[in-house]
Length: 317
Ligand code: PSU
Ligand code: MN
Image (cartoon, rainbow, N blue to C red):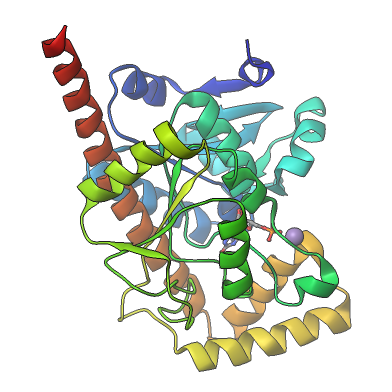
């Protein structure tokens, strides 16, 4: 019996979908708890709706009263959005938060723990954590990457957060043996921007092929994540030179004020929000909606491939 299962509670809706092998998409909640009410709640509800529109059940992972919940009710979502809740609980913080009976948003790393425990195979996020710029000095590498190396989940994202180093992040993913697949794209995207100049190691244009690779990876290679990258639309993409200069000056400011570690992302994101007159919040929502839509479609295809396999197996016996 895994130790984790005593502290993971799956919601009725998510549990029913999983029991019937219906498509489910897991999501983190630290973007919600780190956002501003009510905009953060509206975004979360709109994003959940995108998953439903495509035929999948959204499963938000969060810590509520010291329980790792997979699927939260609307009331709990509102509570998390309003605060006071802990903003950013990563795998490093989770045991202490569980022990203290805390309520808060989980990062990608700790949300993956819940998703894996519940048996969810698809996860959606806007930008993953990764290797930070200057990590060769700061050693700042997100726990998301560690968790990818041991979580058999397909993670659909628009690349790594824009303040990170995309080339170093790809190097780390290669070391961890995590496949990175560009869905209908050749370049590793940069979250707010379509271009980073880094090619993705593999490209696939068909969701059936993506599912085939996921299943092959888990059956024959390892129980790590499979990253599926889906760039932001042309309409919302911020020019990469402009974005890089905004990130560079925000990082400079962070250094001057001493913001580092887990505080760095919120600091840089709020500086970018100011520099773009709030447009970045809209961009963030657009990215989340688009990765969630693709993740839901992937979950639908994955569920149907799995049910086909079961029927084939039955026929053979
Ligand atoms: N993307 C955002 N804002 C965030 C995050 C991602 O726009 O706050 C969160 C995710 O939950 C991700 C985490 O898992 O940041 C990684 O943080 P760090 O780099 O401190 O490990
Ligand atoms: Mn960090």
